Amino acid sequence: MSDAELAALRERASRGDEDAAAQLVELAGERGDSYELRLLAESGNTDAMDELVQLASEQGDLDTLRRLAAGGNRDAADVLDELYEEDPTDDGT
Image 1 (cartoon, rainbow, N blue to C red):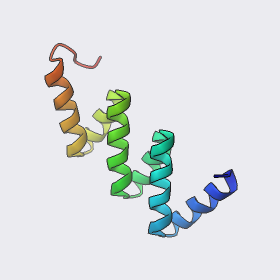
Image 2: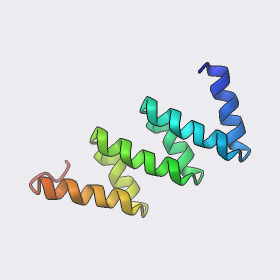
Image 3: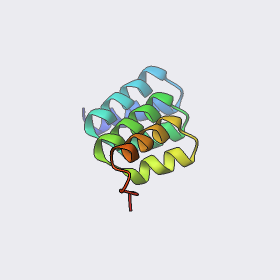
Image 4: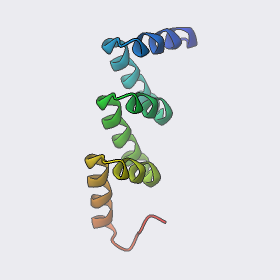
């Protein structure tokens, strides 16, 4: 996808086009683009939030998981709990 096509997709999503938003989430997930996912999640896109939690988990991004959990995301908190159960001596610092 070209930069121009991606920009057009973002514009459509910002105007409430759910199909465009879904495409952006899928593309961002495929690219491992946590920034794009975070922007979409902050705008209220729950699919982007789910994808962001999954990506942070896969990448071992504890800072993102903690931030999301502190913001009330139960899935991020669950992932952190699971990671702690795997290695209770690792406090993530």
